Structure formats: structure tokens, C-alpha cells
Image (cartoon, rainbow, N blue to C red):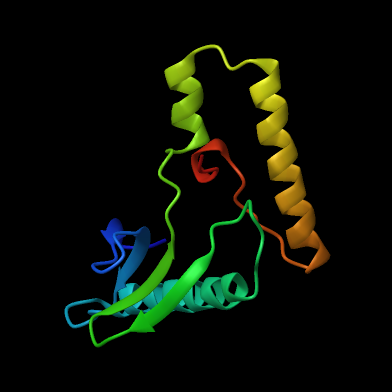
Length: 130
């Protein structure tokens, strides 16, 4: 959905965050591309609105949203362990205890979302950050 995702560091604290940046530059776009980007931007703003209401230990916290002439940016807490898909590949053998821990955290987070009438719609190993 986003143009780029960057790991950023707060200058004074040294704390890492993730910046999801989407370009707003529509100058050379065709009408179809302009409509597609407008839909993506609406979706990104909706995601930001939803994330701003969430407070759960198993869901990356939204820190800030801002927009300038060129970009729409969402800053979120960084989870630097990589995604579950690559962790499974790296380990080759994912033990039952670790699997149970991941599934429990996932189900608790999904339950939290569902109680707020939010449906994730894209749960997959690549989107589960360790």
C-alpha cells in the first residue's frame, strides 16, 4: 500500500520508529493512476484513524501522522525482530512452544480488534512482526 517503509531514529532519544511514507506527487499520473492513488490515500488515512484508537501490547502503536505537499507519513513503533515468515524460514524447525506463544498473541490481538468492530483482512506471516 505504501510507497516506502523506513526505519527512522529520533535524534534526541535514539529510539527507533518506522515511517510508512506514501508519495502524493500526482503531476505526471494518468487519470486512472490518480484515482488509484486517491483510493490508496483514503485507505491510508482510514488505517491511521483506526490505529490511533488502538492501545494493545501486540499491535504496533501509532506515534504520529503527518502530511506535507509531497508525502503522507505514518510513524509507528518499531518492531525490529523481522516478520514471522522469515523467522520460520530462518529457524527451519519452529517448536510447539514458540508456535503456541505466537498463536496466543495473535488471537488475543485479533480478539481485541474484533471487540472494537475492526477486521484486519490481511493476516499472514509476513504481516506478523516479531
